[in-house]
Amino acid sequence: MKKILMIAAALAIGAGMASAKTIRMGTEGAYPPYNFINDKGEVDGFERELGDELCRRAGYDCVWVTNDWDTIIPNLIAGNYDTIMAGMSITAERDKVIDFTQEYLPPDPSAYVALAGSTPDLKKGVIAAQTGTIQAGYVQESGATLAEYATADDTIAAVRNGEADAVLADKSFLEPIVKESKGELVFVGEPLYIGGGVGMGVRESDTELKKRFNDAITAMKKDGSLNKLIRKWFGDKAKTFD
Image (tube, rainbow, N blue to C red; front, side, top):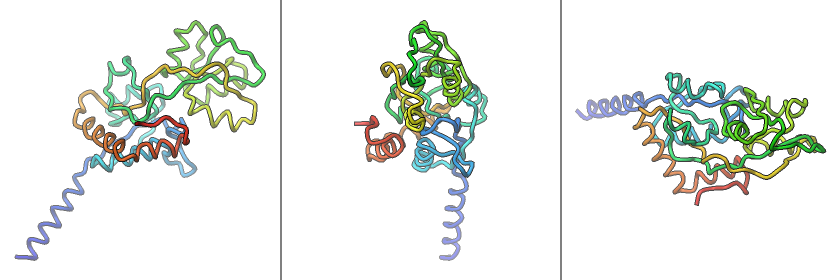
């Protein structure tokens, strides 16, 4: 009888492990340090490390899926993956079509970058921004001419080859690029706060998924592990949660 009970318990544990729900985590894989593809061809970065930990705490098995930024929301709605973790700021416009967890990264300032020695007109010049971003929306309403590009890397190339006078993007994305340019690229103008914090996008119908990830984010905020990850990927001066 004892053996039977032990076998039954083992089978129950095995069944529980097998029944863990697999969640497909959608990201761009092209926006370091938020997310990028490493030398092994794997999704890496702040959101990969955070997402894996959130999945563990929420009791999910997670796999990562990459998708171009300009169709990342439509493909979530279509069911090609279950979440978006791609440096996506929470905005009222996006919240009309998908839902968001609480923010897992405080609002990041946007900044302009141009070629060293240039004097770009940030109010009336040609400003590059990635399609579908809060920066593109800002430029469009600012009076400047918006030059939209499919990827963030394309916006940098546009400045370098003279297609755009400056690029507007998240400062945390631009900082390592400016540093690595060794004086070719510089920050110009003042930083801008034009979006909310970064959250995980989910379908509006996935209320249980949202709740479990929210609980995991709350737990990481309380135990300090989220702030630790933010500092690891964005530096000791990065804005963290109180």
